[in-house]
Image (cartoon, rainbow, N blue to C red; front, top):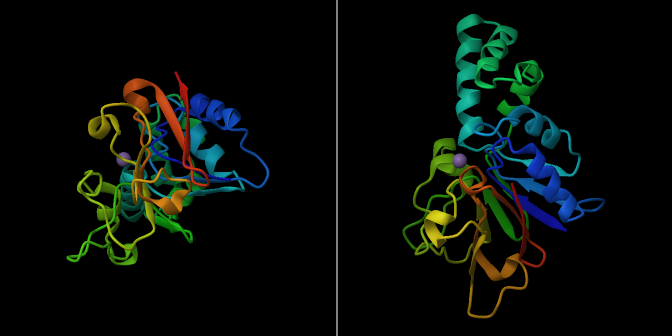
Amino acid sequence: MIYCISDIHGEYELFCRLLDKVRFGGGDTLFVLGDMIDKGTQSLRLARAVLSMPDAAVIAGNHEYDLVKIYRARADEYGDAEAAADTLRAYFPGEEKLMDVGLAERLAALPYFLRTKDMLCVHAGVPLSADGGILPPERASREQLVYDRVFKEPSVRPKDSPCVVFGHTPTRYIGGRDGVLLYPRSSVPPRSVRDLVKAHIDTGVTLGGVLGIFRADDCRAFYVHS
Ligand SMILES: [Mn+2]
């Protein structure tokens, strides 16, 4: 099975409970759509756990993007990656020991989108073409992919594109509740991700304590509550 999750924001325990709940294991793949860090108290523990999972693929969100920007600027300024990584420790109170050059470099190397046959995964959104499709994410800036503010709107239903899976904005601001929001291509209930135009999967864990995960194979969502 293929699972997608985003905006976990340091909620390590909830993340573990959610993987247990879906019995994540052999043969499964996890796509993590950014914003692993900040807000919650176990950002770096979570990031390290996710990055060490052999069956997980991770992309950057705006929080990783912002941290990497600081890391790169300090590394340039000091000419020393070790010293630059040290300065990042202040952003993670209680987890200072978990930050090092290795982790900073892994975050710096994250891609900004992922593609499968049926899905395009980004943190916030992809730019739209004039004819109602999507523009290739390769041509978008990183800022666009992690900060997009348009793609989440329900009226945006790109034509002739794979299902775009994204997070970044808590779905309660769109659908009124903390759950995965699916946009089917037709009035027939979606049976797989191929039947979707979009899947909006940020359940706003830092607001309401609900962490959700989306299963692409059958369009089901699973939740845990803090
Ligand atoms: Mn975000």
